[in-house]
Image 1 (cartoon, rainbow, N blue to C red):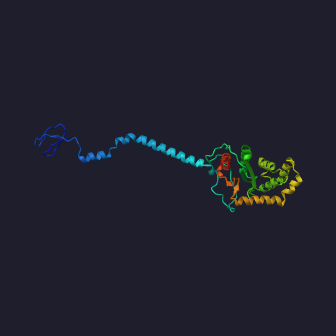
Image 2 (cartoon, one colour):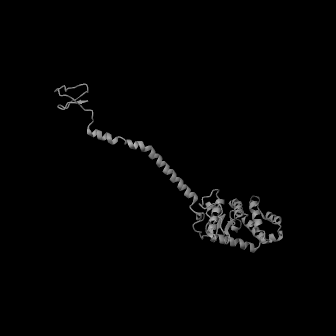
Image 3 (cartoon, rainbow, N blue to C red):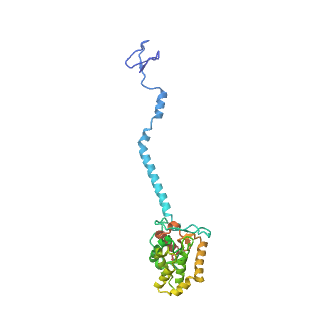
Length: 286
């Protein structure tokens, strides 16, 4: 387009002079200033367009690394102490439940290999268990393996916590184990009860089966039968249950290491190893 500056008429580019007054026409290629300003404002910044893909990639990478670190922290828990409940609750009114040990361990960064330290006394692991409880049956071989790995550095103590309301034969099984203790065969009967859990758990009367185990273990069947019904045996079981309830036990299995309750998520091989290793390092004698 061209413009006549005298009469302000506009003409096509093919004309050279104003048709009204003959003034030489001037080209008007540039848009008004306001239009140029709006165009510049709406035009994307070239440098931003050039670096935008790299900025997006960087943001995605940072988000990914952050998510990984958060997940790892939740999974690892920080240190050996994270294997344990923060504080052992003194609560005996909670409802009894049965909790299966999970397969994976989210406990801590403490190593899984036992530390090479000298200790003046073994680490004590207390289990509160129910012989009819399926998760206790799952935990049983794990504890046997832990016992084999740590040898004299570890002492395992079993406490009765039969959940009689949901396991009809749990109390009778506890009586059988305590009756066997009177003849020096507690751990042998303990092993039989867990290894053969499926054979007796649904029986209407498991007593004949337990008496059979006693005979197989070389015990006096008559004494074993009497002791199962004795007040002494009943009192030992009751004492374990009261002690567990006072320590915050509400279900089975519940494990304590040196008096510290192991977290539910850590009640597995790796969790117990890390908890024991943590306590071994604390008990180390210089």
